[in-house]
Amino acid sequence: MKISWWQWLPFQPWRVVGAVEAADEIPDHLPRNAAALVGSEAFPKWIAFDCPCRTGHRIMLNTDPGRRPAWKCASVSGGRLSIAPSVDYADGQRRCHYFVRDGKIQWAKDTIR
Ligand SMILES: [Zn+2]
Image (cartoon, rainbow, N blue to C red):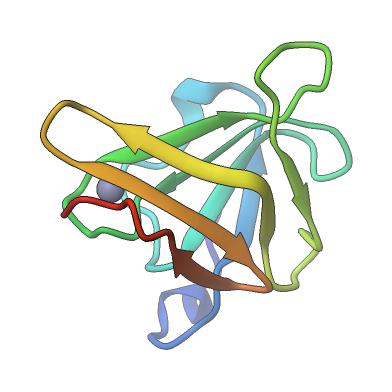
């Protein structure tokens, strides 16, 4: 996956920067607020991004409606990313619970950081 140089510029909304064929091809280092798709832009199987809590853990969400749970991501084509339902990650120490809407993160109140 080739990431355009301008995707590394700061202050960009959450958006999709590219798609890869397999999960192990997702770049280790993604630009800030950037997500990568596994599959194609039209039919993504997964969406992957670094959690907006900025502690460095990666989020992988299933976007294949044939498998549950499944998330929907919208306006992926160069636009601002929306993901539904909310992203709810917990590892025993933290809970990252937020909505991705129109390229912005809205933290839920039960987030523990
Ligand atoms: Zn997090």
